[in-house]
Amino acid sequence: MELKNKKVVVMGLGLFGGGVGVTKYLVSQGAQVVVTDLRTPDKLQESLAQIEKLPVTLRLGEHRTEDFAAADLTLVNPAVPNNSPFLKLAAERHIPLDTEMNIFLREVKSPVIAITGSNGKSTTAAMIAHIWQNAGYKVWLGGNIGHSLLEDLPNIGQSDWVVIEISSFQLERTAWAKISPHIAVVTNLSPNHLDRHGTMQEYGAAKQNILRFQQKSDVAVLNACDAYVSRWGKYSAGRKIFFGKRGPHAVFIENESIIWRDKRKDIPVMLVSDVPLPGKAYQEDAMAAVAVAMRQGIAPATISAAMRTFQGLPHRLEFCGNGERRRLYNDSNATTPESTIAALEGVAGPIVLIAGGSSKKMGYAELGKVIARKVKVMLVMGETADEIVAEVNKCSNPLPQIVRVQNLEQAVERAYALSAPGDAVILSPASTSFGMFRNFAERGDIFKQLVQKYFHTNG
Image (cartoon, rainbow, N blue to C red):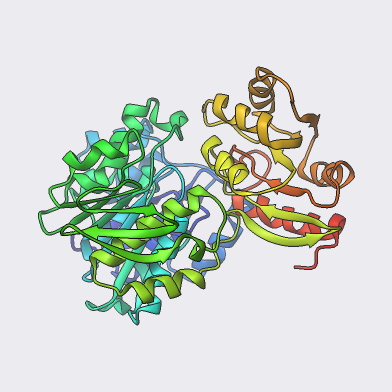
């Protein structure tokens, strides 16, 4: 659609950059933009500051039927539920719907590597971008990882590479555009966002859109060890590469090395010890990144050198230093049981765990078993506290000491009192932050401030 002078509604400004990015893009194309969000201005301060000088109409704290009825196009934020009456109104009036991600994937001229999965997608995306940079490419990293690339479109050259993290909410609506990336990576699938998708089948179907519209010249990188994802090759018309198990086109671990196998030849790429982050989950992320890099012809020496200098991402088992001879980790992005399991399995020594938050209707049975086996003290709070405690209490002895707390500061204060030198203190909630914090990043930042206050961390 030619956007100049068109009336466009941006439904959901949001806090993670997508609404801001698409608003700036629409204004640059000459559209008449109405930005509408159910949040009030005080909840959207950071996003509003980025568009305050743009000629847009703001409708905050409400949606108005007349805005949607008069629109030539509605841009839908990923968080907008499918049963929204305003989406129904647009459908009834044949008003086109689109998304920030769909516009970007249609308009970008450079090759795109997109990563999705229930866990590990941000780290895998960042690893791939880091390898590409070390190989001398100009690379753009964005998407659900926190930065909209839409406003960067004029600066992205055809010889550049784009690496994006893409969520199930975003993928659910890429079907509108019938588009998939040149290289698609699926890290894994486990119960998540069932409050939105309803069932694992619907959740998986949304994720499968990353593969569904690929062409024969495209590439799908899939987790061979995942019960769901290992069967998803049929959804892609492109070449399939699996990671985690030996196979004809695969990346796997053998004799403490990460191996690339292609055309009946094993090529050692790097040592497992080159992965600078602890645990099996990060090894899987590294294998996925190696698969993409080797497929594109990047030299093993370049890959291994890049991986050794990769520093990880904030809020993802982020080491916050030593304080009072305790090791302190911020894993605030662990919003699923599987993420917290990965953290507990990846960190050695006695563990003091801070967990709990808002519910996404996930099961905690497996997490309960790992907590019972690995955790010395568990401090729990929020809506999911009872569910987590119930699963831990189903396990046989030894059980951790369980302490209920009212908020994060009380949790850190009690963690200091109940831990001992040599322990690891980990914030890994296995739950979302909503109701207590704006997002996982704010939760993690506050945790880092609190551990400095109580543990006097040395970085």
